[in-house]
Image (cartoon, rainbow, N blue to C red; front, side):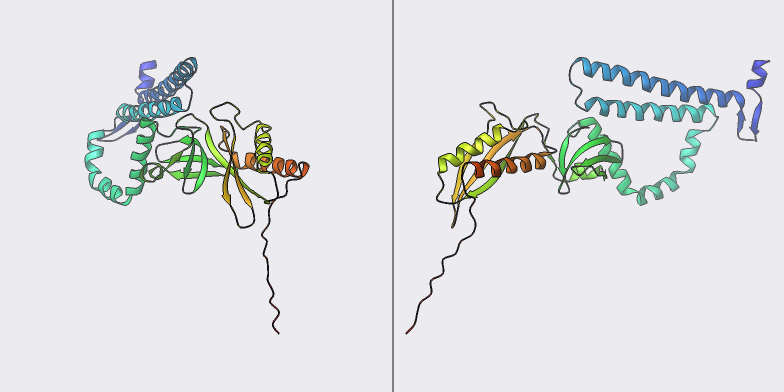
Length: 277
């Protein structure tokens, strides 16, 4: 009885026949594929977490496995439904060539996506600079990547941008990055006091590193026309929100200068007036 139900034809023609059994088998293939992806994803995440290497690479591996399994599932579903894949490809060869010529950019993005996922030079949660924007990578798919800007705007970028253009990956070496804040003070101020105050301000911010190798330093960079120009050099891991860190440091510097009676320089001009007889 059950076998007869499975053999019941839904669509029947001279070259194609669709039965309830083939539909059931196709649904089973899709279910097993989804279950396999879920199980493999859990295993990979647990493995990376156990080794303390969950830095975004595991998401790339999962993404590749997901594409591979769904591609196989698609082929099996077509075969289960009785569709001749060889005939389908041969009959649509000319159409595929035409589509390929018209979709060269999409194909380029597709290949770039595979390259990104396999090489791992750019991973999820990496902070990169592309097209003049500093962004955090949220998702890498086959054709496009989703990134978030410092203003928390979501931007979709074609993958070929990451392959063909010069990209700065701020988190690639897992080391803190160096930043500077420039400030000019009046010549009447004590330069050593300025140095001390700037370092104290840097040390009072939680995102500024304090150890011997990456601790803050001060440079007297230039004798300006109306100011002594200093650079506060510091290191930080807070790369994505570094502009906010700099802003808070400037507030601290301004308050500390006022407290220590250090005057910030402003342009000055001396005008000589000659009196002609």
